[in-house]
Image (cartoon, rainbow, N blue to C red):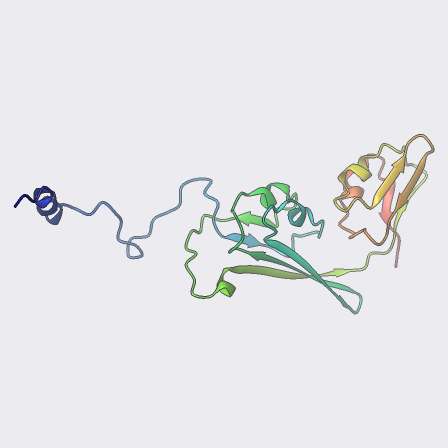
Length: 183
């Protein structure tokens, strides 16, 4: 009888393993590894860019009206996430970070859900002062497309049903003509 692999089997018995002894031997992730999502609700301005750019729809946002404002909860379903990092790239505030944590073995799908809740006080309506030069920057940065600017007619308007009061337009305005009026 011919056993072609017997020499290979015997040599493997006396050689070191080619794998690491996990979890006894902790291995750091490589630089720029995109692992488990971390979410800091305090940094979030509720612009919703992450929800828009998430291709597998792994990010959801839920609003709950409470006294004085809203409770906003972002949920990241890591069972659907492709860890592409686009949500992190579009988060100007640094609220979303893909960590180097690759330990994502779980018995329940609920263990692979990251969420965070923040309270957003009502800021009042977005208003424009006479200093506006109708440059359209506010409309370009509005993640909800709530602002429209007609340069020719020198008209500026806000769809308050769409506005999430993230403040990106206020930060971008070169003349500082935008603000939230007192509620």
